[in-house]
Amino acid sequence: MKFDIEEKKSLKGYKNLKHYLKYFLKYKWLCFGFWFSLICTGVISFFAPLALGEVISAMTVTQDFDAAKTYALIFAGIELLGVIVYLIRVPFFKQLENNVKKDVKLEIIKDSFNINIGEYEKLGNGTFITRLTNDLDSLATSFKRISETIVDFISKIGFIVFVCVINYWLGLFLISFIIIRYLIYQVRMHYFAIMKPRVLKKNEYINSMIGESIRGIKDIKTLGLSSNLIERFDYLQTDYAKDDNKEWYVGSALYHSANVVSIICNLLFIFLCVFLIGKGSLNLAVFYSVYVYKNSVMEFAVHLGNLQDYFKEIEISASRVFGLTNQETYLHDKFGNVKLPLFQGNIEFKDVTFEYVENEKILDNISFKIKPNSHVAFVGESGCGKSTIVALICKLYDPSQGVILFDDINSMSLDQSFGKNVAMVNQYPYLFNLTIRENMQLVKPEVTDEEIYDVLKFANAYQFVSELPLKLDSYLGEGGTRLSGGQKQRICIARALLKNSKIIIFDEATSALDNISQQHIMDSVETLKADKTIITIAHRLSTIENCDVIYFVDKGKIMDYGTHEHLLKNNKKYATLYNKQKREKQVEEE
Image (cartoon, rainbow, N blue to C red; front, side, top):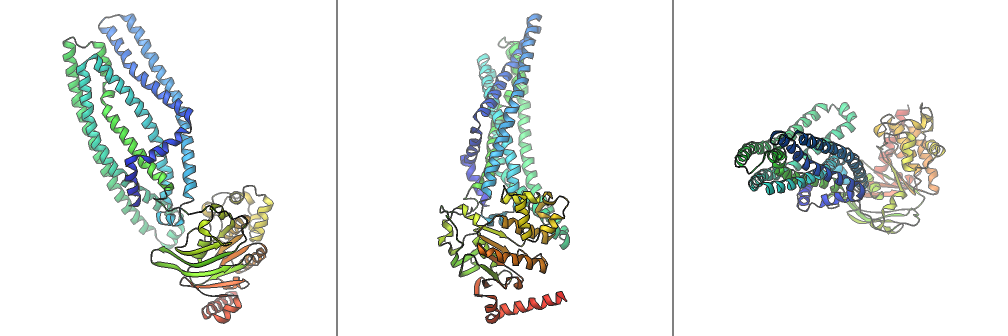
């Protein structure tokens, strides 16, 4: 409902449409060429029926066949000129359209990266995909239609003035008909403004569900969720079709009602012209010219209604697209303007509380310090708040209460460049459907193959990568689907190391690895302490025995902290968990 309200507000002032049109003004010469060609087309369409009328008049009234041939050549020349102008217009618009779409997409994608991670979790990826594809394409199409309709609209006004000058009664008839058709289209437009956002929103939700189903295909197969999901899709599609049909049926009924009015008016128009010709108030050439152009002119009201429809449609699409950049619609990450000159790696939580949902505390008034060039770990049962702590360190969220300090500077004051100081590998890392080299280049565009192989060796990934037929040029599939879970984690660890940030966070980052590979990586990680701060969240406590400090988290609170030996001796829960895992490991090895 939040976005529905935003859509209705935006329709009142067309502020998003104005914002969208600014992109076109960036390309003034392309706009000028497109609009000039449109105006030429309007002028040509005005004179073409007049020339054809003169041909008919010369053949039937004056029987001057030489004049008829001359007017026929003029008519053909006008039509040919219209084709040439159209061919000129196409490249102007196509280049303009693609430039604007590129600029808008880049701005929206850039801004969508600043939307708070919680908004993505609520909305689903399909929402953003739909708005950057369907809605953006609709914007580009609407601009073309609006431009053409405005020019056509102006040419029709000129023709109506021309008819009024020739014959007052014909002009009055056309104006009366236009008013009737306009009122019918006003009703249609009002209905469209109510129904269209609702239909778009339901379609967007379906697209979101489809996207999630594709990404979760493994779980769908292994858990046997397909029948329940199909049933849900059936319900959603039925609900969408109900509103979509309603919009179409009513819109179609109003459209055809206008056509019935057109049929009646056509008949009355012919009767009026016959009467005026009989009285000598109208000659045959003018009659034919007006009659040929009449249907187009009589659609004046339709074009006026369509013009308003297009403005509403483009505003709705623009409000959905630019809504992604609107901080009143979606929460954006908050940054200050303080730049850390040289981050030492000091981290401090002071009385920090965090809630995803109001009155449901995930972290409850926790305080701790992390010293530079140290290796600390957070352990505890699932859901205790460990991952939330590292998400706050990465500034994916802001604390609900309390303060987080980096080198004694409030995290809320730091600018966006702070992100270069933190790298995190989580339990379910994401790899792009690019080659291994290209995935690494996303972190460091100028990286050399030698540097890539160095971090692959560090992450115990060098051997399996060197055995691939294409090695660094191997495509990984969407999300790294061509790799095993352990291989994927090792590539992601290598990618994070390539960033060379001051803080490196491993959030269950080795959970998919065997004991030997995991221990190899954790031993390598210890060597990073020389100039980095290492933070680990681990399920296997044996991998963090050498940490400088281990924080034991329980129900959103830090219940104890110290070295592995200290916790083993003084914390029963930690000792119980550690001894249990130790026995399980012994059984596994046996």
